[in-house]
Image (cartoon, rainbow, N blue to C red; front, side):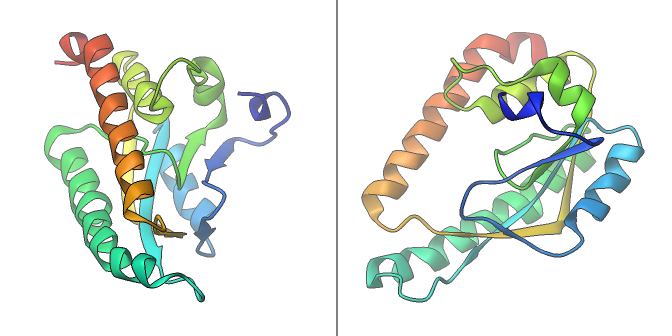
Length: 168
């Protein structure tokens, strides 16, 4: 939210600190934004970082398979079949005015999903484009992966409690 006060331009890209976006991602995302979408979710892929631990190297392929299912199949399929998309926290691109209008709720455990729900409830549109790629590191330990997924599950539950009846 603080960055929204100083960001300029018509499109805002959001990334986790470990993300490495491919070249041209903003150009691809702009096509969706220019077509009237409020946001577009790109595809996150797991990269192998040199010097990562053996445990991280064992976790990376499992997480990579999960991410392919989520970002290359689930998100685009949901948009195609049901006409809805979700911003999943990183490698997402927003129409700057749309993001400023809703902002992120600091009380939300998964502010990305909360923002998505509020945009959808307001009649907005979120696209998913598996051709907009950014790579990220896999969690280094099973404990960090478990903690991350627990927070995600709790956040989805919180958003469901807040908005599900209205979204349905």
